[in-house]
Length: 143
Image (tube, one colour):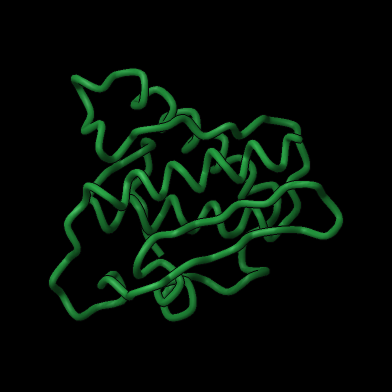
């Protein structure tokens, strides 16, 4: 049940964010690509995330650090920080653009989501921050 809720929340979050954003007109890796969907799942865990964000898959392949570059502990720590800040912004629609932060992300500390889920979620946070010029933590997002 948790995996379905997490996938639904992330899927709806990304779909909702996508509906109200305008695409960048630049020709770099952040440009919009039609039908760009990334499914994140781990056979060892019951969690799955579906990211429907035009341009993300191309950016993940062309720009993001390769799998294995970051440790699982690093990814879990950063995802916790990013998800916590994201959820704070969801609760403050007058201060933060509610078309960017429509739904909370249910990322629980201490739950083993597996490396692939953490890797792609982390990279989505980086992509989101770079594309929409947001900063979810005290450190500047970079590749």
